Amino acid sequence: MYLKVILRTVLLAALLAAALPAAPGAARAEEATVFVRAGRFHHADGRTVPDAVVAIRDGRVLVTGGGEFVPDGARVFEATAASAGFVDLWTTLPRGEEAEDPRPFAPGLRASDGIDPADRAAAAAAREGVLRRLVLPSDRNPIGGRAAAVRVVGAEGRLAVDGTPGACVLSFVDAAARRERFPGSLAGIVRGLESALDGAAVPFGGADPALGLDARERALLAELLKPGARALFHARSRGDVGAALRFAAGRKLRPVLVDPRCGGETVLAAAKAAGIPAADLAVILALDAGDPRFHLEAAGALARAGATVGFGSGGPTRGPDAVRFAAALAVRHGMDPGAARAALLGRGFEWLGWGASGPATGEPADLVLLDGDPVDPSSRILAVLAGGEPIPRKGRP
View 1 (cartoon, one colour):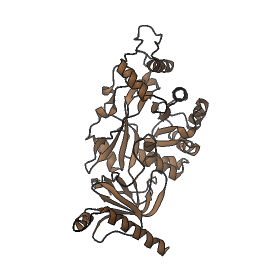
View 2 (cartoon, rainbow, N blue to C red):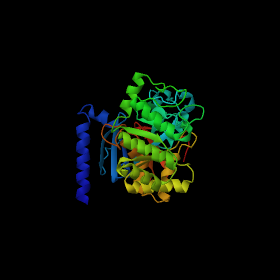
View 3 (cartoon, helix red, strand yellow):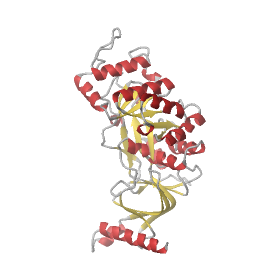
View 4 (spheres, helix red, strand yellow):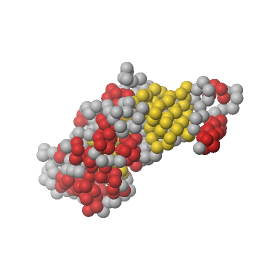
């Protein structure tokens, strides 16, 4: 055991020596390097690394490793446990209905265009460890536009948009089927989507057969929903979920269900009926959807079947710690703690194509330091680092 510790120490020292500039600038560079030392480090893929050290410089991870090596006089954050930043996989724009296109089919809308970098709700959530967010357009349009990935930058908790193009967001819920316009039903939503993709007229009286889409928008929609693409579906009831998964299977899409409220077994049965393996399915669950026990028991069932699970706040009114509390309750209702940590720390974010599960060399140093397990509600957050900078917690214990 002693030999293993020595070897880890020598290895980390060698990595740091290779990463830091040679003398005479080496001393200054070493002073500018910040270290996080934790008894356990939790990764989003479920791994837990004991006795971990993360070196940070210029806001990014310089190197990670185990062992006791930290240079004398270095700035060090120490904690019982540390993790990658928490991820909110479903949040919305403040006053998002004002950003809607008046047309029901709007592939050109982008949630990124409505993001306020100084969003107070996002800053409050950052103090509770939420450092990455997936912002979805309104669920009131069958084609709502594109999602946006954002991360917190710096001690003030400001938001920056990830440059990766966002996945298309479709809505199969009642809010998208309005009586005063087409489509007025779930069947109409499906017919409208098929028409928009295939260019066939939909036989409904008095409405535009082209659904208001010009050639550019049709081309964009075809690109967003091409075979193999990820697509997010607002779908709550058994009928919504079944229709969404059948549509995804027919178009060979990789579906992400947002806020299904019909239970894990129902979702899995619908996926099987549509010919979609659980491993090709992702599900985002929120805290306050219907019966909390029924809803959160779904998290464990889905994870055990091999689906990717993530947690979302559902919007800025749910409280800054909503995603962590949802993960903790999911564990209480049968989800494996490792799977719950993976969900909280962003396995779903990685599945959607935005970033790795960190921390890896060269990535932003977005970390949460705690005195216990992130999915244990009794664990206190000691510090939150966004790009290596501590976010002030405003007098919290």
